[in-house]
Length: 260
Ligand SMILES: [Zn+2]
Ligand SMILES: [Zn+2]
Image 1 (tube, helix red, strand yellow):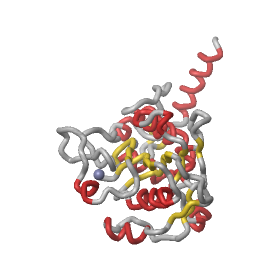
Image 2 (spheres, helix red, strand yellow):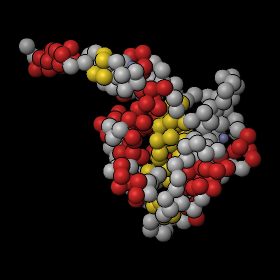
Image 3 (cartoon, helix red, strand yellow):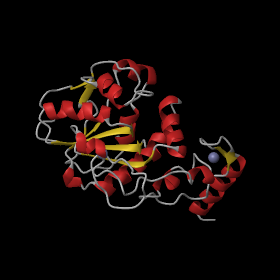
């Protein structure tokens, strides 16, 4: 028997003996033999084959047009062209453009929760690959100079032990011209969790919570900020404002999920 055929046989025996537990519904399921390649927009199913049963994988909703051409908000009406949402028309904020892989719901929400709050850091690999696919879909290499994760305050970092945003980007295969800078920004003020706050409260809660760790590092740079979820955009705006104050030429935002 060829070595790869033997490996496949062993893998399928292991799958039969040790079914995986779905992170969505908690049921045991047989992992698919072979994982299809990832790629927008069905990347979640491919990336998460080891973690979610097929019905839960199908609950993932890719972000798709029509959406706000600036903040990436997915419009409820599923017809028409991309355009600016009311909030962005009113008050555009500091970042130029935000995009996300999927809608913050269902299996994607469960996966992000498991990564952040249950320390399932093995999810960072497939979720990071999904995020990288989304990056390649919306940006070309020449658009970005620096990739920077949204930082946690050091107290939260110490409790959690990792910054999920950094774990998502650390294995990206980027050309040498694009740097991943883990500590471009620091969170100087511990803030209450944004959960349960409305847009205005979020803006007040997060105001001046970030600064650059080395002044001048982002001057003239096009920065891609990365985080797990974008909700109202208040955190991304506060980060972008700190970078613009430091002279960044432009700040874009990429998240795994976009809350509706
Ligand atoms: Zn399931
Ligand atoms: Zn918008």
